[in-house]
Length: 141
Image 1: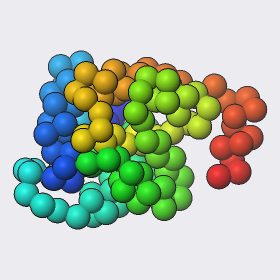
Image 2 (image 1 turned 90 degrees about the vertical axis):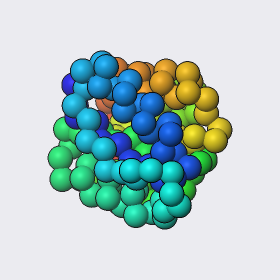
Image 3 (image 1 turned 180 degrees about the vertical axis):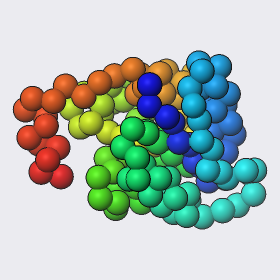
Image 4 (image 1 turned 135 degrees about the vertical axis):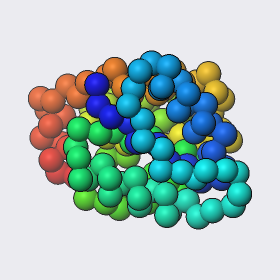
């Protein structure tokens, strides 16, 4: 499985730590880019950092967490070849991989409970891109 890169702002710090432990328990290779505590930081800094790492190695996926997931999503999608999806339930997560070949998922720690977030992470990791007609569409992004 691909390596997983994590990053969050202060609003997503606690959920990032939960997800990191979950991934390590599943024997995934995890790179945590921060933030390292719940002190206030600027989410764009972490979204840019993660997106640049993903662009350098397409064999990695990213998980960005902030309060709503929206800010991280907006920043990540400014980067070429990053397809970040705001994942809020299992179906949105699965479709983001199957139809859009998302390589970054964003989560809102204030809007998504721990159990749902972990289900979404599991689905994101195990779902493959379907290709076909979806590839034609992804190429147009």
